[in-house]
Length: 105
Image (cartoon, rainbow, N blue to C red; front, side, top):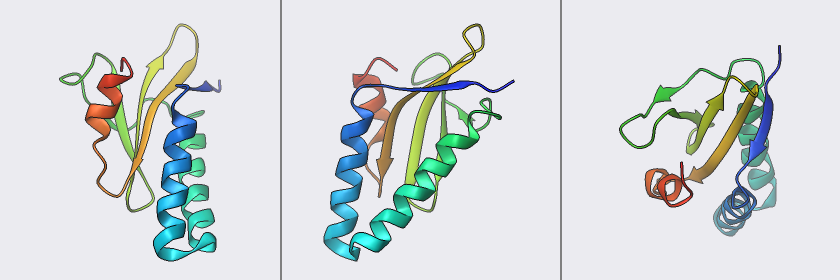
């Protein structure tokens, strides 16, 4: 059974920030490729939601996985609802722990 992917409302801002940063130093083609890598990593959570590092010391049930070479996706799994909630997506060493915590993750 596939899990549904839900996003914290500020994840759209995360992705926009990532895109702008990559465009500034590598151009729009590379930015599009990196965002596609992130999207592909998120999509894998539909069928394998329990992968990644468990980060209970940050927040109960929090997990994190890499996306591409420089991104991190922070999320929690709700098995009862069959949902994965993406709390934050960061890139290039941004503080995903602080960002996730600030969003209630």
